[in-house]
Image 1 (spheres, chains in turn green, yellow, blue, brown):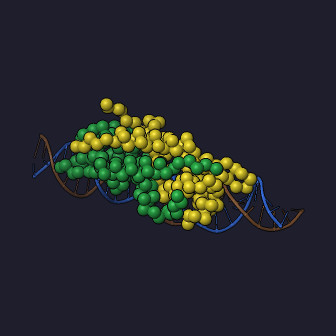
Image 2 (cartoon, rainbow over the protein chains, first blue to last red):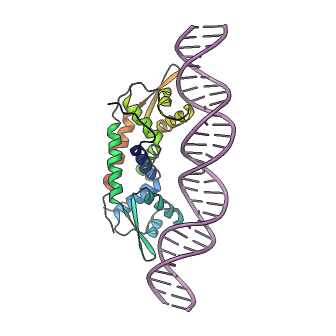
Image 3 (tube, helix red, strand yellow):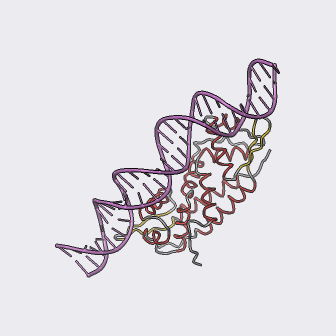
Amino acid sequence: MITSVSINDSSIRRSAEIARALGHPARIAILKILAERTTCFCGDITEILPLAQSTVSQHLKALKSAGLITGEVEGVRTCYCLNPDGIKELQSLLSELSNELVQTCC
Amino acid sequence: MITSVSINDSSIRRSAEIARALGHPARIAILKILAERTTCFCGDITEILPLAQSTVSQHLKALKSAGLITGEVEGVRTCYCLNPDGIKELQSLLSELSNELVQTCC
DNA sequence: TATTTTTATCGTAAATTAACGATAAATATT
DNA sequence: AATATTTATCGTTAATTTACGATAAAAATA
């Protein structure tokens, strides 16, 4: 099956967006922390990772804008969680991609 | 199970490296093109994607340095292929990651 | 009401990325 | 031997990313 591959394909673009969000160790670490904890404030993460609060906040923003996490304001703090829909998309898009990459070597 | 999550964990760093390589539409497109074709030279890809030859070469270099493709010199040209080991690593690391991201929401 | 706590945002600097054209090096073709 | 082809690399520019400290805004606490 020959598909014409385009840079502007929306599935390709979305996969790249998700991959880019995963493309920094701090952001993968944050996702893992969120998966382990039920309460998850910016300050909690700042205590665990060797990064400034503003840096952690920036990474959280990146993950949120990629749709991988949600952030609910709770008074002064914001409770961050994995976004089930985003994680499902991550699973399906990236597993679909890796299934497509079956070797047809030269 | 509480794992202490560290930015310097080698599995996290490797996952991030792979994800970063996937983090551009052109590079995902290139991987898909490589999966569809048996012969795969830089020039072939340049014909398909709306990018300059030097840009395609740069993206190929990024994919190769992440271990996702190989490049065998064949005379003047270089034959690029998916790297089975790299693709397997992509599959296992990213599926392991997405399995870990089971929702424990607040 | 005053103070503290928490997080987002601003401003900034350094590094990296992405794009291109030009060119060099290597091989193939005439 | 001269020319053409192919790709990697260089040099450059513009944009984006990553990090930090400082600060503002909002809510909680004293």
